[in-house]
Image (cartoon, rainbow over all chains, first blue to last red; front, top):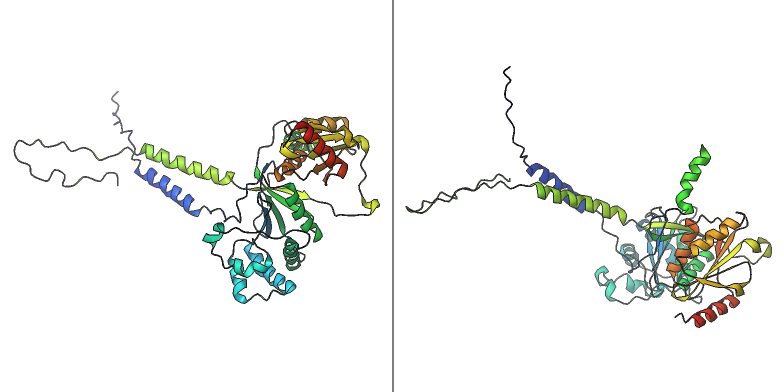
Length: 216
Length: 177
């Protein structure tokens, strides 16, 4: 039988198009990737098995650096109201310009008395200046004032109270932060950690299996 | 793009005797480049999702001085864990700090679990007492152990004077700095 001979096509495929797609995707992902929000201070949190992603909205984050200094970061939507509240509560007489600058600033890292100077420091110069942190000693606990302002502004609404401590910061500093929260009747916090795998064969690793059995 | 022809490469008339160079194909095999592109994409996708910080919930009790509101802990089910200098953990069962024992963060899980097995669930209570020399990491590590070992009842408080002294003595005896 005469069979029509199929012409063997070349196995060489033109890769140009695929290459274009690959690099297009690559550049797309790189460009849309959000840069890590500028950190108030260099803080390396410890790791834990907690798997819940840290909330970003309505967040009031207290960072503790290895020296035990305390810094404060707030979500952008909170800043304006909180500074208004604090300004009235403490009679700070902040000008409109101060408040606008505060809203643009990344974090609070000085006592309230130096706030007007602090907000005028350019972000790129921040790391060249030795910051003092927010005073947290019993005589002058300003963190408590900040928390109080946030609580008053967000009456009834939920704030995500975040605490981010450095591996090497002392527990004592953490306790002081907790105490400042407690004074404002805030008892539930979320500690920022790096994700870590649950050890196999631990109670936690077995837990979901157990729950599934119970349901059956 | 890759098929761009080199134009005019041989257009220049050479003198007689000059060998005409053979025109090479400008086609480049793009497969490795595609591989590299996709490799980078996968790499970036994986690393971005990995670096998401997570949050660990912590609820602290309200400070109270009213004895009625204080939780009572059965002595048979009590385990006290104290964190000292240099990543050392001290623990004792019941209410006598004198029976203090020393361990590390790797071995504390076994102690917690052994006690858990021999204690009724409702009686088991772990008291976490970080000393003033403990780091924040130590506190988080122990709290993490509570989550890993599925401990229902635990509290974090400061060590008493006696306990502080005991820790200091043990540290001096063991030469821990």
